[in-house]
Structure formats: C-alpha cells, structure tokens
Image (cartoon, rainbow, N blue to C red; front, side, top):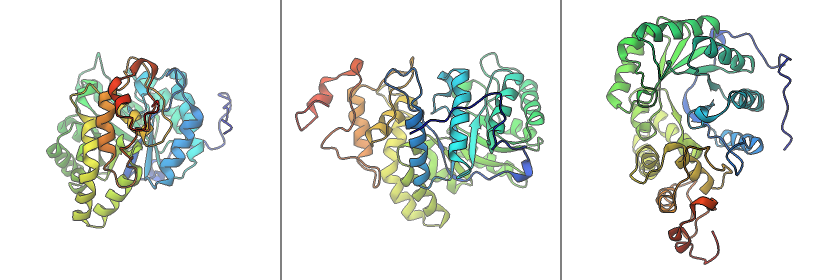
Length: 351
C-alpha cells in the first residue's frame, strides 16, 4: 500500500469551509479507532491503520472517531496526531461521518488542532474540558465558547471525569447548550440514569447524547442515546452494527440475545481483576481476531498470558468475529512469554 505524503504548506483540495448547517449526523456505531503500531510501539503502522479503517467501513459502521482515547491519543506526539488526521480523513473520503478528538490543555492549542482537523474534512470535533490544573466552571465554559467561536463545526463535549478529573454536570451541560455548535455530549461516566437525564435535558435543543460506556450499549440506545462511541467496536464491528439494527427495528429480544454473546468481552475491557487496561485489552483482542494492531505505547503494558486466555474465552462467544478456542491466534511479545499460554497451545507448536 502506498502511503500518501502531505505538504503542510499546501491547503488540501478536500479542505472545506466549516458550516454547522451542513454537518453530518452521528448515529449508531461510531468506532473509537484503535491505533496500530510497529513492533517497537514507537511508530504508527500507517498501512495497517488504513487497512483497519477499510475493514471497519466494510463492516457497515456508521461513523468513525479518529484520535480517540482508544487510539492512544494521550500517548501520540503532536506531529503524529496531525499526521493521523492528514492520513485518515482523505482516505475515509466521506464514506461515513468522521469525528476527530482535538483536546488540548489550553484554548489556543485546542483551536489550532481543531482548525487543522476541519481543514482536512472533520465533520465534528470531540473536546475534553481542560484537565490536570483544571479551571473553575467559568473556565470550562470559556474554553468551549472560544473553541466554538473559532471553529464553526459541530462539537462533541467529552465527559469522562474518572480520566480527566473534570465533570460536565447536567447543570453545566444546560449552560453549554447555549453554544450553537455544541451538538453532542459523549458521556463516559458509566451511569445509565445520568444518560437518561442528559437525554431529557437535550430534548428540544440542537444537541444529542452519545454513550461512551461499552457495557451499557443496548440499554443506553434504548434509553435515548443516538449512538455509541465504541472502543470494543474495533473487535466486533459486525456484531455492533447488527445490535443497533435490531434496536432501531424494535427487535429488542433479538438485540438482547445478541448482547448476551457480546457483553462478556465488553464488560472485561471495562473492568477486570487481571490488571488489563482498556487500551491494551482492546488491541490484544483485535489482534486475536486477525487484525494487525501491534503493541501499546509505553507506559501502557502488554496483556499477560493468563489474561489473554480470559480474552480468548470472551471472544469465542461472538457469532461473527468469534475465534476458535482450540488455538490462540496471537503471538506473544518477547517480554510477556507465559508458560500458561504455551501450555494451552494444543497443537504443541510455538505460539
């Protein structure tokens, strides 16, 4: 595959003037795209990334989130983030709506990254409130207001207080809805009651709710969230799309029967007692089903052999992207060889 280069001094032909009235809606399965790396974890595998995008699109997903947390946004260097935007958005080429995370600590940096994403065709921007030395509520409102004034493109508020340390409360959300191009709230707090409250607050406004909590998927959609920003969709895009189709058609019994097979791996990635973080867990599982992902970037740690067996068990239940438990389909990283993995290799060959 030939990887295109981009002249940063040249405005790309596909750049457009942002227009909120011309925006594309985000619905259904919006994949928080994982980031393939080479074996060192220090370089993005660009060919694998583009191939993964095509696979997700072929599965029928409804949207893509580029530079997601699942895509190791926090660990990418600034020039790598720009390169990912310049590479992915022209490749997707309007096949589905694309959201780009442009979160930065300062207003000016967020505006700069947001303008770059819009120049390359982003349909929406996902923005965290400033974190670490976070401002007061007035500062959070100011941050979003200034970004919205500078870039007239749909904005998705990103509420993940466990990670950012800043909560966009329902009261703050009401105030942020006064900003015309605040169009979405991605809520990753993990509370179905909160999702329902945000949906109720959004009624009659220009904004809608997206759920970012994988294990809540069918219930959040039934409760009024218009879509899922979904990390585990990297593993099972076909199942995720089918689940949404069942729910949209009112086939709730079929949706919940499918969810019985999908829930174990979604729940494991969200919370487990085997020291497996979400990023390495999703990448390991995606690699197991046959996609090329590579390792996570340090200090994220590889998944141990015992935990890989648990992931394998969860994957074996999937009706479309399930794996055969008679043989593990991954290769161990050199620093994570484990006797249990080799013992469960039933063919006796090196894994």
